[in-house]
Image 1 (spheres, one colour):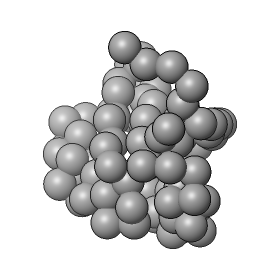
Image 2: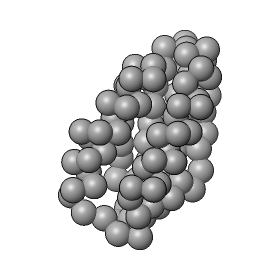
Image 3: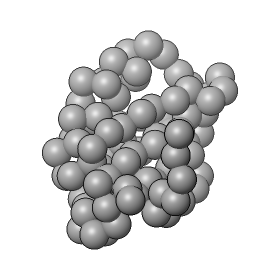
Image 4: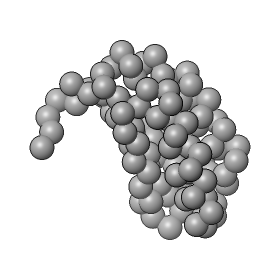
Length: 94
């Protein structure tokens, strides 16, 4: 089964240029380290979540140092910080 990570972020400001940069720059970066899909969700006026799916846990684990580097880069380029990150193996889907 696949492995999924979810990170939760809060920002001090938000504009559409941030969304464009995320889509054009950060989604491809995440995909390039082994993700099979990435969804970025705006969950509030100044909050978002990133849901990343990998084929399996081994692929996800091998990508985690690069993902940490990407998260650090995002936090330095945008007025935001990561509040939490979670991950786990999928056990059911529909």
